[in-house]
Length: 160
Length: 160
Image (cartoon, rainbow over all chains, first blue to last red; front, side):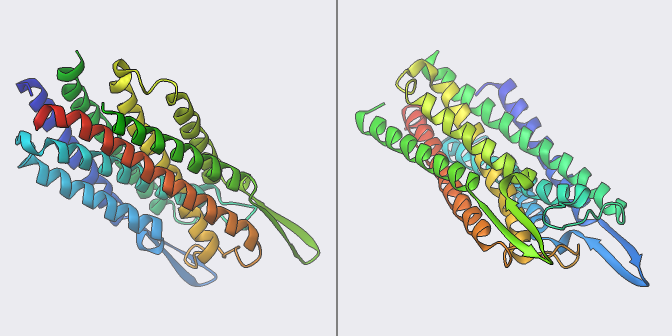
């Protein structure tokens, strides 16, 4: 692995850590409440399983990226790292999609199922969820770039 | 690539085609209706964006796997195939998660958001969605195994 390649990988790992930390913090702080007929309703991430999964998945990806900062220079671990990168990329894309599906129902509702949109009542909560989704989507893209970069350098030696 | 490896890859590609075709067909045929106060409500996959995305993603994965049956023996394309396998694995895990998130609300509802469960009224629809999810989950696992198998054979030559 060349020095430029190492620096690029390190840069992408730091970006991934930043994006996943941002996604976790923004989702954890998503909170808003509204009053309907003197009753107070509170919207928070823990009200939905998909948002809980989102936080756990992003936290795992963040922890993995941090651990890797101390191990990525060991060539003997590259096979495992590449495989784990693929697992994390799949986990990140899963968490974004699950949270996005619920966020879409929260924004637009689903008239066929009788599920009303809630973003009109709790706009701050929806804004936070949108921010978290953008950060998590960026993290998924970064992980794809990391895999692309790793595969390119491995296969370059084999096939070119 | 050894002959055993080729046979294994071909077997996994056929399994992936079977699983994705099953997921698409079972989701497309998910249909049930119920009567509430003399009004008929129909549940079908096209009522939700996540289920539409699910069908499109599974169809893309299926088409890709079929195309690959005619190209996977060409060594020069292996870099591209590995990368596309990663993209398809991320797409499959995304589609399963998005559909699962909505299916979970359909099954259990979400009292905080005021979204009622619908599976009690349209059980056949929910059974079909569950079947499609199982098939799609299997397809995602198969794609991960394909990536694992490819990475193992590539890196085996480099690092062992």
